[in-house]
Every structure is written in structure tokens, then in C-alpha cells.
Amino acid sequence: MSRPTVLRVPPLSPQLHAAVGDRYDALDLPTDADARAAFLAEHGGDVVAIVSTNGGRVPGDLIAALPRLGVIANQGVGYDNIDVPAALERGIAVSNTPEVLDDAVADTALALLLAVRRRVVVADLFVRAGEWSKGEFPLTDQVSGSRVGILGLGRIGQTIARRLQVFGCTISYHNRHRVPGVSHTYAASPAELARSVDNLIAVVPGGAATQAIIDREVLDALGPDGVLINVARGSVVDQDALVAALVEGRLGGAGLDVFAEEPQVPAELTTMDNVVLLPHVGSATHETRAAMRRLTLDNLASWLTDGTLLTPIPEMGR
Image (cartoon, rainbow, N blue to C red; front, side, top):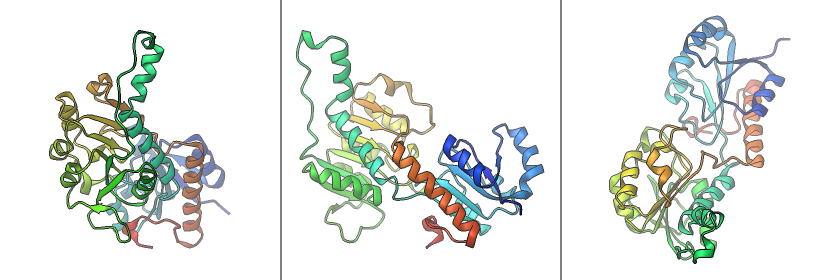
């Protein structure tokens, strides 16, 4: 009996790539456009499933080239790499991997906030350069007891909030709608939230609805003493406005795990000692990536067995 044909959309981790190949008849989507067209003409009719990660785009034209496609199993809580309307219009199921990465991303957000406010990276370089023998390191700002705004109080946002409450921080948030059952102060807009806090953490999903939701108005509301932390998507911040605010001193600092055109990072950011930059590693722990991989494979197996998903994206319902 032949095994289902699954298309692997690069990039995949070596572990996920191998696991899909062990279980199914796996094909790898070519990265070259000309090779991709020939590949799809030859193999497109065989593919019943796609496995992807946030780094691998699944656009509408790829979906259209796969007439038997029934499911897209995406490793990542976000799925803005997928043309979801095109998939749902065809009745194609889409899964993601929520919850299993909440702790890792929350840890990263807190690490960035501490690193920026306490100038951890700069202090490390200060010691390495032998500057300590010449005088004390300048005083820094405290995170404990500060006012923190969370833009996107979903599962990850609430996980971050619980950590910050241990630090004695006052938590406010903005969502499209109030979150039932939470005691944190609700702000009616991102700008209103930014005006009321010392630190703003972005955890909203990517996509058209949140494109540049953190714009000049929000950055100016946060102000020259404020710090922005982004562990969401690069698209949620107007990156040009962010660079300008930092260059002009209208924003106090930033901790960024994500950028508009990864892996490209604006050169201005790399020269600033009030900015901490990470290469999109919010969920990149051994434990979390293994859990994400298992859930991706379990979603794929579930759909191929009986047409159900363990964690369908919200647009599909449950």
C-alpha cells in the first residue's frame, strides 16, 4: 500500500525533515522558481499534505498547483506565512502549534526586557573590554515595580504577565476585545496603552490586521524613557518609524527578536547600545522545538487518519 505524498516546504529543521520522510512519501519543494514550476507540473497532482514552518511561504499559487491538497501542518504558533483565505476557500485544513511554545517565548520576552533595562549586553562588553578597572558601570533602570503594557493578551501574553507579576509589575493590555477573567487594566488602543506604561511588549499575531500596529503615534506615546519589546512578528512594527524614534531619542530602547525582512536587520540598530537584537529565537529551545515538532506531526497524522486536527487554526473553529 502506497504512503501519502507530503510536500516539505523549506526551511525545515533536520529533525522535522527526517521525521516526515520516515513516515510518508516526502517531496521537497525546490527554492528555484524555474525548478519549482517544473516540479509542480510533474508532482503537484500527487501531494495531499504540506508540512511547513513560519519561515516557509505557502502562497496561493502553490496551493492552486496542488489539486489533491487537503491539509497544511505548520510548525509555529503564527501562520502568516500561509495564504489562509486561499486554503480555506478550497476546504483545506490548516493547523499550527499553539501553547507548547508559550513558556519559551515568555522567557525570551522577559530576557529582552531585563537585558535592555539593566543593559546586560553593554555591561558584559564593559567587563570584557577591561573598562571595569577604570571605573564603575553606569546605573541602569529597574524592571521590578515598573508598568508594563502587553499588546496581545493571548496565551503567550498571559504567560508573560504571570512572570511579570512576580516582579511586582503593574500590567495593562490592549486586545481587539477585553479578555474575560483577567484583572489587568484594559486600554482602548495601542497608543493609549503605550502612554500609560514604561515598557511595551508586543505579542500580537502577524498578518494584515496587525500590520504596523506599532507606528509613530505609539512609539511617541511610549516616549524617550520607554522600552519596546517585540517577540511577535516584524510586521507588527513600523520598522522605519522605530529606527527613526531610536535615532532621534524619541524612544528609550528596544529589545527585538523579529524584524520586517529577516534575516536583514537595519544597520542603524546594530550600532545602538540601547537596543538588544536576537535572530528570531523566541521559541528556539530544544524542549520547545521538540514539542512543536511532535504536535506538527500529530496534526498531520490525525488528519490523514480521520480528517481531524488536534490544533486547527482559529479561522477553522474547533
